[in-house]
Length: 71
Image (cartoon, rainbow, N blue to C red):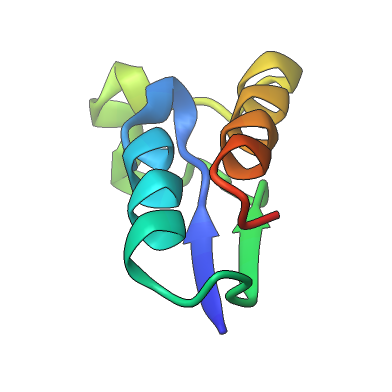
């Protein structure tokens, strides 16, 4: 199982991650794309990730996964 946490602003590189998994690993790997990112503690020192992901970012992450054939 592969777990990937979607972070605001695509900081985690979700687009690149799902393309790599789809290209380099088995045709149907078990991938868990997670939307549970929760800003806390010192993350507020970094404005680009000091918020939860929004609905558009979540839909975009799922679309990338579908396009890559992994979700």
